[in-house]
Length: 182
Image (cartoon, rainbow, N blue to C red; front, side, top):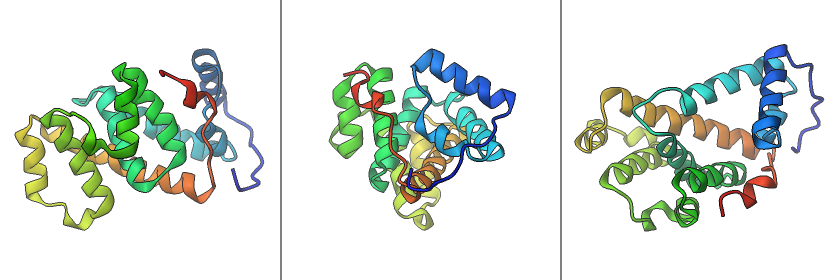
């Protein structure tokens, strides 16, 4: 990270989260390390991320990761493209899909549901002021319910914020992401 922030003291819950990352992944994602300078901000970030990406939803984990990668591609976020591109490769079992999502999701063979979902997320990224009833209707047409539309928007919005923070502080991905699911 480009900022020289000293790691703070982690509360027991955040320390347990870091320990769980080490146990399951073999490393602590650098995004968490970057937020560790402020325990309260780390807690808020992790809680919001975990709710959006892991909690029950009409969106699959793969769909949420696909949104993360499509948004991060528009924003050219090196950290998120690496980390969430690895997740798309892993969850889909398709390394080519992970690469296409990072480079240009429009070149991928996607279902109408996934195409509409990603088109909405990218429009929300590029021109949020242009989102209207027709965009939400397009999601409903391919089977998304009201809560699902909310979740597509929430994941896209979160990654727009996260991409901007990663760019602002020159957050770099853990090298392990580059080797995963290839």
